[in-house]
Length: 250
Image 1 (cartoon, rainbow, N blue to C red):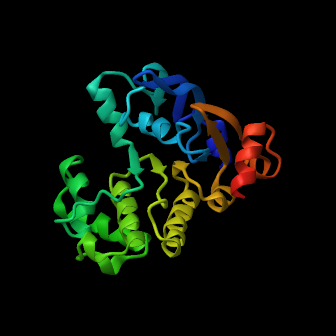
Image 2 (cartoon, one colour; image 1 turned 30 degrees about the vertical axis):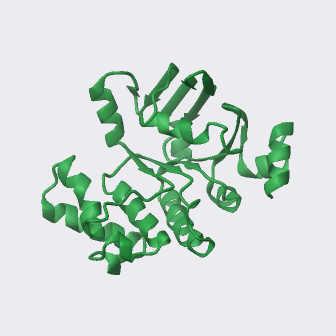
Image 3 (cartoon, rainbow, N blue to C red; image 1 turned 90 degrees about the vertical axis):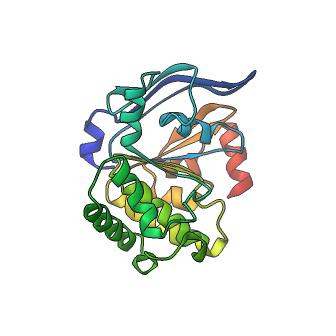
């Protein structure tokens, strides 16, 4: 994280965020701030609330208590606020969610043309630039079904970047990939982090977290149990739950 990011106002502010699915409380008073250009990696056992938390940040899930503020816009029931926040956030999921009947470049051009009202020429130029950035410019005219899983996920990243977001959210982006395809996606994410993108990443890839994260959050049972720099979390975790989790996966 740059000194500029460290001294600026946070771009994400979450205060005492809680959420229930029926009677089950999945998030419990989660409070965290994220600075511009900061890379925050979220780890923890399955069912700990990691994915639900980042889905609340762009209102794919609605939190019931607490406050979420994105780039000075309060996340509430105001549709304009929700729309404004979503314009600034790109999200990449476990599944690629590409439109199978559209080519790769058409998938990337769709949102800039329909949401940002870019002319076709501008959208196409941006799409080709992003395909080069993620390392697959030659796949522009293929359909998603003709690509490997790793290539599809790189297209999904390019599609999210096409809206020129200020924040990128990643929800276990490599968990559906074969092992040999994971590195190519992580390499794209590393480049994105180095470029200064604000990123929240839910992942089980601890090597990526160690190399790229400015900060690691460890979730358990809907709470942030421990947070800190990667070397501290991975080498000298303080909380017994963090210690147990890391002992089982490292």
